[in-house]
Length: 258
Image (cartoon, rainbow, N blue to C red):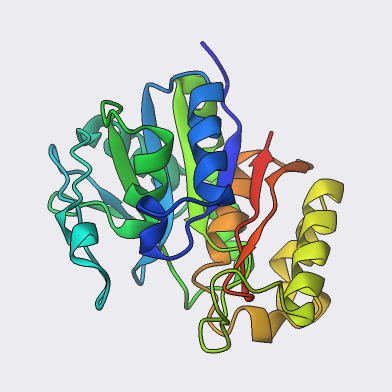
């Protein structure tokens, strides 16, 4: 059986599911290039809980967790089957690693999951479930969370973390504006740290990265990257698969960890 890399993808605004652009094109290619997974475990920036939770729905709903977007976006559905067996397997791995976790039989797929999956796997046939993040916990918690998931990669599971490499919405510009210098500086640091495997720097990004707090005023869109890094195991290095910007402050970078 194929051992999958762990992925981090930037999911951008929900309209990425409809609009053309470099990142949607990249995600379509990525889905075509990867070996078909048996199931997908998505770690999305948009499911925040106090302790780890796993979606265990047989038929997860498509959650439109946003407001003020074109009506066509609200009509989109991603009818992939759920992966309750994967949820239970993941719960066992997390419990063995000392995490207090639980499953949620009602949880659907938020846009951090279904937007990139719509582009990568438009046929929606691969079972999918989600794992929540805990934004009140520090980076080391999410690295450890990922390390508990590492065995899944050899079991036909694609661990896909979804957030944004930079995520300052309050200072965003127009869609095709060039990257702000302070956002580009963080993006360059991130790529270098990932490719060098500097796990301590990545965990402690607020102290080690340039303009970290400005690029991530809240940690939710950064923490999934640490889960992907952890899932690749100790000493892992990443590889940048894609680099582009939208709205001047949103880096759409993607990384593979193995």
